[in-house]
Length: 357
Image 1 (cartoon, rainbow, N blue to C red):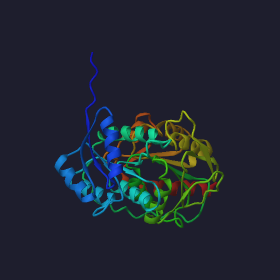
Image 2: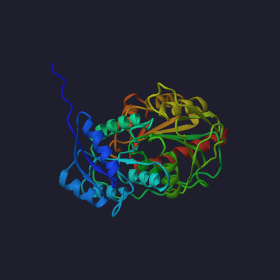
Image 3: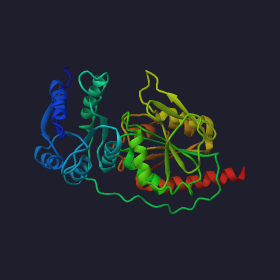
Image 4: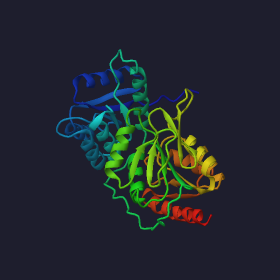
């Protein structure tokens, strides 16, 4: 039987720098199964070219004249939905604006490939080609601005370190996390710590944290090893490390190993939370590609913890939640707009139970 030949992926390159545009063009033209559908030098040209050329996927810069990559992404997702991969530098405003583009509908964020002599050029090139091919097959829909819900459930003001909320997300995660975390209230009112695994390209964790802090009423940190968790605060892993619950109220970090499929890993987080917190913990698995988190969430549910999954309709990619549901790891499935209220209800139950102990 002949193997089915993979389709050619037509890519629109959007980049104002001539040298970077030529580099990306060379990379794609030298790779099997890719075709450069066209190029654009600013966001306005990108919107027009998308409507005219109908590419399979767009490789989008962020810092451009007329319209930047964020604004171009927002307009494309509202007028001609197309998979978009941000190819950007991670530093300063550019990194943060790239994360904002993820919230506007871009599917993934990659670091720009360096020069031919750069030691990490080959890994950046390989990651870009793999991501463009995978994202070209992700169905996208028209994106309209979503107003995150405000919390309506009153959680008792009593603080307890005996409970914990653990969340994992990947593709589509930043926008979904923003919606859920906004709905949980503030650092002064939410009574338990929150640990989050979000798959994101190396170099962009700080930009993600900066963006979340600028848009949320709850405080977000890059975690430090052996750091004491504060109720009502959110913690994400630094580059190259897994995030764990080391002990009750204590964060652990573990360096990425050579054979790790994902870093930070959702399975690693959920399994550590199950071990340390057991039935007092709450686990949530959200939009994302792959199956990271399914095994760990099953362990958490088996230990008595309460587990949620984002539903298929509101997920950008239903891979991670679907895998968790398939193995029986999920107690309750909710849309992204309902998750915060459902979590708050369970937090009420956990805090009340801890107060009785």
